[in-house]
Image 1 (cartoon, rainbow, N blue to C red):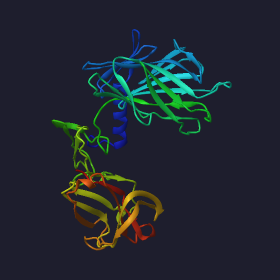
Image 2: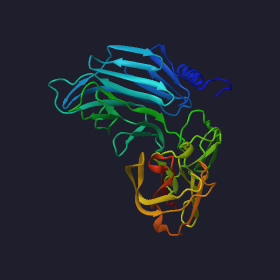
Image 3: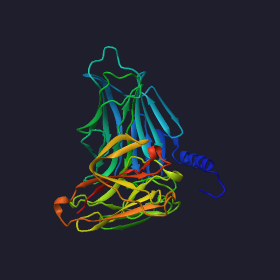
Image 4: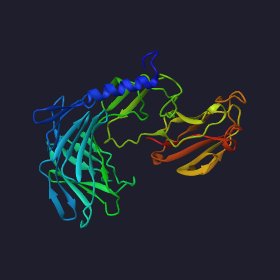
Length: 402
């Protein structure tokens, strides 16, 4: 952020800048939109959309062919109206159905708004979409995400994050099915309160930080070696230390981080690591105890589990289990299905907020049989300033790698 500029003013400037970069313009044959982040251009031609990357090599689009309930489907040919405002394009197909697109930094959001279900409708809602281009769809096991791959089998696009909700905000069951040259979208709307909103997003396959944040400068520097990619984020702000540390804190401004991606999914090697989940509760000085991992949690290696940001010199409880929980306690939650409890005392200057820390060292046996075993951890620190005199950490999950 520029020096001397308030954060909310800078955010407004950035938002206006991004809106301008993603604006839709009228052109011959429809509307045109550039997406600088995805490095593609999309044409909205009144039938659907067609996206072409800057580098060429493929093209992709979807056209709504028909929709309806049960066996009663109606074909769509030409929208009643086409509107374009900012980064949004909308096709009003009839008085029931509007198809819309939002071009922004995420990619191309592609949705539908269905105003009403016919009184005499039977069965569930379905929409048939014709696929433009040569990319082949592969539907995920949950039916809500579609990967489009090229002739070599490489993933080029993700059509993901399908959500369908009704006027009461209730999420409805929905899934895609890949047919010959088409996608079929089915929505169980039998008990829904109309109108409905249907909302997936089109994105190129990409690498993403595990703890995304504005202005982190993710991907300013990238190094590639074989199937390994290392991406730098110079202005990432977490105080995590070591490998896969607790990334939920932004207390260390511009500390920087490096993200390592292993693209060789066919190797069969199971990567170890520590992920965090849930949230802790504060103790003295507003500090929330945290768990971080130092070292490599792979068989034959040593791993150091670090407890930080507790009250200096305070008694603590290290909860260990083989699964997660979410039991309300002390203003937060016990996040571990507890099997073992250790009762260490934290180091650091006694009584000083945030000074409490402890390193727990473990040698992981060199035994392939334990690859993939998962351990869950949480720390409880006694602290008179905390709710019920106990400050809770986030949950942490350790996966043994090979």
